Image 1 (spheres, rainbow, N blue to C red):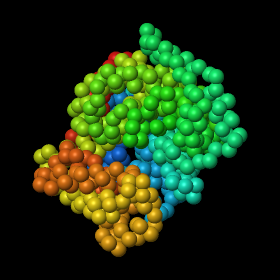
Image 2: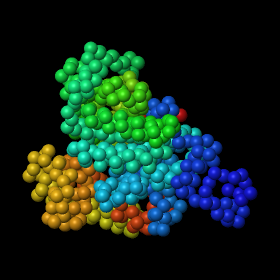
Image 3: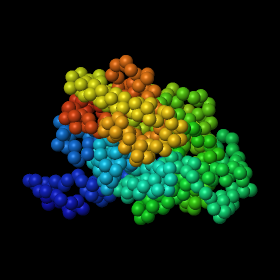
Image 4: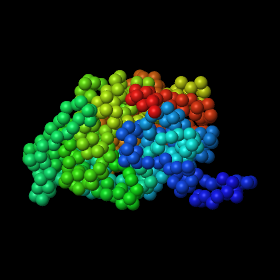
Length: 537
């Protein structure tokens, strides 16, 4: 700003001629958002009354340490394409959205102790929010865009096979949530704790039974003309589901309380992630879960603002089921959530191709079934579009960079497939899942297959046995396949090599390259916005 202008609540300004220039670090970007901009734009969107929203998980982010490697120092690396789509959208975006313990790694965590996280660049929640706010401001968001934005501290993923490993996971997640305290939504995934071994005390069983015994839950339809649903639970089912979901629900209560204290009274959205399961979420289980959270665990009314149940599809795949079944599942889940004042969130909404969304008719069916009260989340598609653009680039250096990414990804999948075939496939599945967390077994992987195989194994253990099995299956199917950004092998596993390629990527891409990527990202986003009917304000 002008050197003689008003005193701004910004830090570390330097006089340059008749101007004072301030660094765009974390504290300054928060001060800009909260005190300097014409009006704050960062909101808890659901709590602010928005029943539709779009989560755009940019993973191409330029972090502060990346600046020396940039061939084009003014690039905003994907944010520009997302912002262009936002300007055509009638619904607000979660402009900042990444998993805070998967794609991101907290600044206070030791990377050596957590080799499976931080694969988008090794930066943490604070740096990601800083980058998003800077991009929003640089693109004219505070003057050229009328809707608010949200920041989703996505997928705080809690895992554990016993109380000791669970506490280690909780410690990491508390650290990540603390660093993400200035975000406006907190998405917490405890689905890995379903069937966590518990022995319910007599008092705990009595609390469960008291919450359900003799009650008939009448759930109105989210569609005005839709049929009402009724649910009852007998004692045996209450205790069976209570044991299955007890630890997952108690962790949600603990972390909701933790976030509430972090926010110090500032509003926030809290989203349940229930989708990382092999089966779809039965609507009656969703109802049970929410009643248990509120009436048994004591979560305050309205504490859950949204939830992402499993709607019957797999991550990074198109929906292949029957659309009438999808309509019933989405309607039932959305109606149950609406009963608690919450909104349905469609997690992992990326499909096989950017041009076809989640498959023919998926978006339109979900929109109709929910009365257009729904949120979509995408992220993988933006990295996929990056590599597709480079594969077909007119620039030889960009095409060569894609080929290098393909070769590294193919080699990584080869390592994982070998580990699976020789050390995991011979074991019963439950035993194979458990050894992934066994330090002795991991040490044996390093001795038998080498340091790179060990590193990759540690990187993907958090995704579980199915990812190792997928690596083996795809190697069987792709032994002679030519490099392609749209091949399943590359799409599913290129995240393993992305971080190591970032410096080369940033040194290679010039203004034209970034512009082509921005156009691709904008169009990939608009495919979904148009299909959802969200282009009219």
